[in-house]
Length: 448
Ligand SMILES: NC(=O)c1ccc[n+]([C@@H]2O[C@H](COP(=O)([O-])OP(=O)(O)OC[C@H]3O[C@@H](n4cnc5c(N)ncnc54)[C@H](O)[C@@H]3O)[C@@H](O)[C@H]2O)c1
Image 1 (cartoon, rainbow, N blue to C red):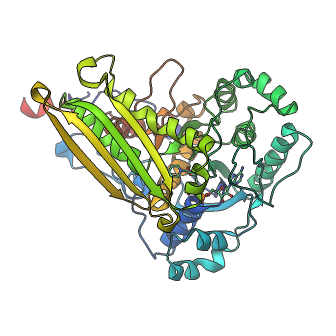
Image 2 (spheres, rainbow, N blue to C red; image 1 turned 90 degrees about the vertical axis):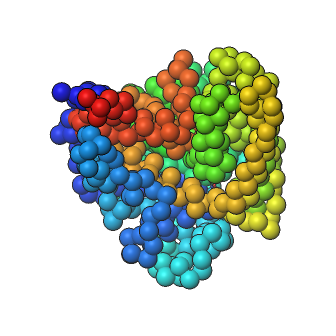
Image 3 (tube, protein in one colour; image 1 turned 30 degrees about the horizontal axis):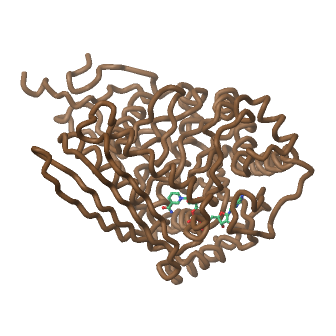
């Protein structure tokens, strides 16, 4: 029937989603601060030592039917997601530290907790990585694969994935490694064939992250990207994703400052308040901060962080409000702060008759604490997409934009950055694949 509040679209039907039975293998590229906080956190939750706060898949609910129906199950009870107890972790890193050692070095989680988890964490040892310092200037490592060319390195990653696949039922790859230098899409990214030729010729525009992505997608494995690198946002990788039914999504975990930005900016726009300036600065002292201290890696991050405001404010539609917006982003490496980043935003807004006002946001956050639940949700939802016939072969999973600073959308379609539109899109996608009515929030039927 379709009530007015609901979209009335009866859709896909849950019965054709493959169940989440068996083990889900999670292959993490880069076992640094975010990855180890993610893995140790999952283990702590599995043992009942802590709650998975910040994770929509674990704590979120989804309303079904009318507001008067009182039917809001947990998301994990509504869609078939892998159980945390079924996650099996492995990964690659350029350092040989196991996950316990790396988590200790990252110093995000308290020593007491890590010691309790040590017997498990130290069993996860990184496989040798594909790495080249040309792409991350501030790092050099010892645990690195050798190959005669980039094609050979891709084959080695494919072999790692195939070997791990034999021990689990399904696999997802997630990039939690460092931010690479800024790379623009080039001819080598235009088609799968051009890319494969580029691998053979060691094309300079193919960075390590692209090699991992190519390997995962070639193996039919979903690939999520937590960093702002040019990785799967190319024609070649979109084609490969579709061809092999291996889902991809946008990039760069949307955690602190950008999350706040994509909440505040839609509020100003909804109320037709103008914005003349938005200055965002950060201090952070972890290894990510050190990598971003290099101008070429910073440029990659800056581009990713800059995108959101332009798309949200649509200055071409609202020139009086946003045409002259000055948007500036700074990231300052400041070792004493470690992973406990501090972000300041100064926002110059103007209202009725052009009168100016200011808003200051000071977010004292913990970078990896914010990123870990996003990594978990992306892994679980990418695995769901792979098991869902209506999603697995479409390539880009735009409904996962909710988690990402740089959402990816179909060529020619502008990306949606507004956190609440993203949240609604995500939940409606879940309703859609489960064959229940979508929710539009119209709600006139309550006043009949
Ligand atoms: N924490 C957040 O809030 C947040 C938000 C958005 C994006 N990110 C991104 O997530 C990524 C990870 O952040 P982090 O704080 O864990 O950084 P980190 O420096 O602690 O960890 C990155 C790890 O990746 C490894 N690495 C680098 N290149 C590699 C390669 N080619 N193959 C395998 N391993 C490689 C490094 O040795 C390091 O251990 C960064 O790119 C960061 O920009 C983090």
